Length: 104
Image (cartoon, rainbow, N blue to C red; front, side, top):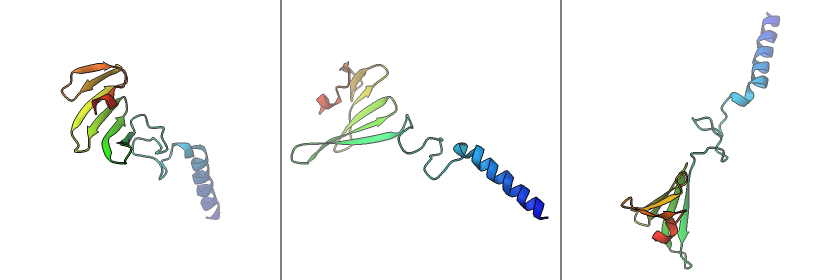
């Protein structure tokens, strides 16, 4: 009986040792990426503020698309990094490169 317990313990230990990198920890998301920044579609938000500290807008990046929203939440424009094109809220092309701050 004791041999069986030791055998099970060894199997569980070796499984955790060799396959530990595949198991999800509390720091991983359901898609398998760690929350430390290696997820290419992680959503990040950056607040744009004036010199006096008042909020001008929010830039949100998720994957290859970056959006600019006003303080009221309305869409001002989008930038697609794969096509390198910035578009306004109507979908019209503004120019090439990330020109979102010019839409404020």
